[in-house]
Amino acid sequence: MIPRNLQPVLLRWAAAYPVVTLTGPRQSGKTTLCRTVFPDKPYISLEPLETRSFALEDPRGFLSQYPDGAILDEVQHAAGLLSYIQDRVDRDPAPGRFILTGSQHFGLSDAVSQSLAGRTAILYLLPPSLAELRHFPAAPKDLFDTLFMGAYPRIHDQGIPPERWLADYVATYVQRDVRQVLNVGDLLSFNTFLRLCAGSTGQDLNLSRLGADAGISQPTAKAWLSVLESSFLCFRLGPWHRNHRKRLIKAPKLHFYDTGLVCYLLGIRNAQQLETHPSRGAIFESWVASEVMKMHLHQGLEATAFHYREVSGLEVDLVLQTPDRTRLVEFKSGRTIDASWLKPLLEAKESLAAGSSGQTFESILIYGGDEQQVRSGVHIHPWDRLEGLGPPPSSPLGLT
Image 1 (cartoon, helix red, strand yellow):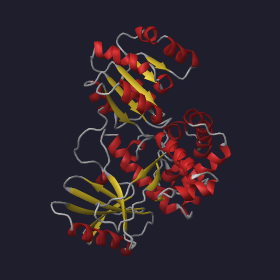
Image 2 (image 1 turned 180 degrees about the horizontal axis):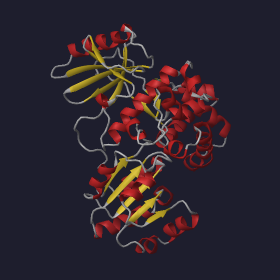
Image 3 (image 1 turned 120 degrees about the horizontal axis):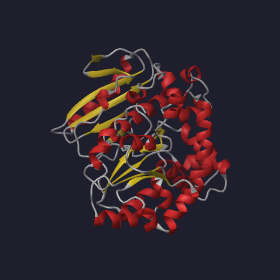
Image 4 (image 1 turned 135 degrees about the vertical axis):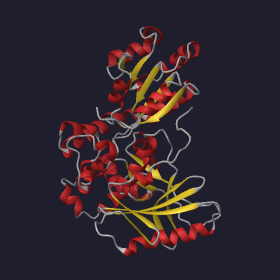
């Protein structure tokens, strides 16, 4: 296993809470991480039907096999077990007794909230960040190879061609997870919707248009998008605004967590094709946005992240905000810095700083080249040096 940034966070909360719940997309490395961090704990997967039936039909008998706790993998398949775990940890609240993992956050979060409130820390493991990927011997070093391959660990660990592994991943996801969460009778329409969402990554979210293009109603599009979000395939980046500034556009942006998956869904079959693809800029934007999410979530922290756009057309791709600091971040996939790239950052900084007292504003440009410099007060970073977007000290995320 490559080192994961979440490991010390997982250990910290396992020393404080009787239960730790780790969730995230399938194949992000949750099982490997838990078995590595807690090698002496019994490991039980609730995927096999016979194990799942035992846990559901005789939960007390099932848990009695593990008096000191266990790693319970894919626990969303036996959500009824959680109330019995609650009873056990109430009687013996020793820290770190149970480590729970689950991929379907949509169903898992409700069950955890109802049964384990105040007894568990909730952590999130996404596919490896760029810094984590570098631990693989054959990790990509070029920007477009990185975007094309994505970050799912098996692709890099086993040397599987991305298009082959991702095709299997999408097929499994459509055939299993979606049917378990929603009654999707028309898989062809769902597949179309999924590809349309991939084509909208890095863009304002328009559910009416997505639904119409996929031949489904807006409520159906909304429900299907919720499944994609709950399965950690994509996320919405909300707009930055003050309530009294009605001139701001309030539509969220849609981003996929993994650009390799986006490339597969868009029919991009090699890195050279991506380099000249019309969605190249939007894919790069989603990649950086997802890296920011990983840097925060893998430290157990929440990313207070937005995008900024005014009716006038002034736009900044990412706003990272803390109580005393606001970072304005623009993304450009080109390798040569253009002075025009700085203009929206300078204008937005001037506009926002005028109405904000006690805030420090920083302007940052992330681009596809390899030079680091400062121009007109804008800190310019190459694509593979994103440390400036990481989290400052903050309160831990995930305490219920």
